[in-house]
Length: 430
Image (cartoon, rainbow, N blue to C red; front, side):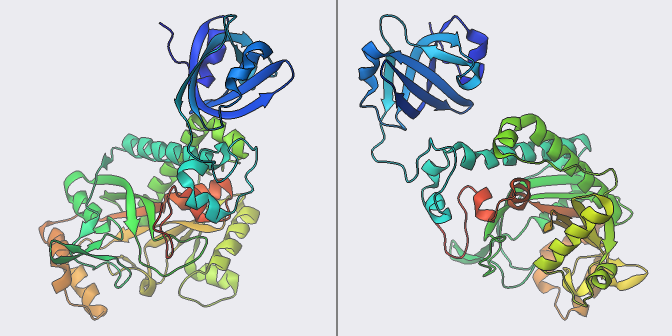
């Protein structure tokens, strides 16, 4: 029996008769020979048909799904250094499925010239282009590296609800929905759940979607994105969390290099080096450096600080610590010696905010006081606050935006290029 062999495996089968299956990527007809380029999940295969039988393939359109049986032959000019030659009795081609219409872009072209709306509207087909699908190989490898790094630190992976009964974390920026006649909301983050699970597992992480109803129509915002979250207990302060961030980044970069090497090469990605000690700057010092006095960093500020970190430290990563308490959630722990600032941080990667994290409050009475200071009642938070009535250790955590990570790895101009099916102010399909 002849078994299917992937394009990347052909070099190990020289001289053997094998079957390849995939999409007809491109057909090239010469006077005495026709080349069929087949595409599968691992790459491209060149199948050679002599002129006498090449006519059998003349009416097969590109993107037809087919199987081809032939003999693997060495050829340095072919993809992967080998090609598939039709047997003497003629090619054994089986058509598995034919396209009903022409794709919105030419998949075989080495570069993509189609507009972003065209790419997004036709994503199930346009993402077949190797350059458009490659970023998601980086994404997959990054998640694997994140998991591997935190597993090695004895974290437990959890999966928390994405539909919640109250919009308590940050006010109005939530999506409301009907839940069997009751009002419910899409979760903005797993924050409250992962804090609760610190009381069970001490160290937890999650990868999953989060939803933000922010009317931001920019190249760096989505209404739904993938968040890589972690939370750990028995910390001294936010620097213990920053140490875990470092290990997660190392794991992600290493995994991309190992698992997605072909995508890295195809896209010409320059993988970052995670320094042994990621440089940091306090928010107050950052404002002095920028010559400003603002409660938060603007995108332009992030770019400026990113460039500064490269010049001063040779690092594409920079921690900005000590954000003003007024700009952080109520559960954030204040800086003991400067209570107007927080034990929190952002990580800037190549001039873009990638991670937000910090130390949380862990005593019930501190939560009551924090809410009172902001003029809020504890009533809406009773379920959340109950966790802290039963003893919680000092803890903290962080959240990393996966699409932003891949955006900076690939130097993409728009976050929508690193989201399979982006959801934003205007887009709910496909």
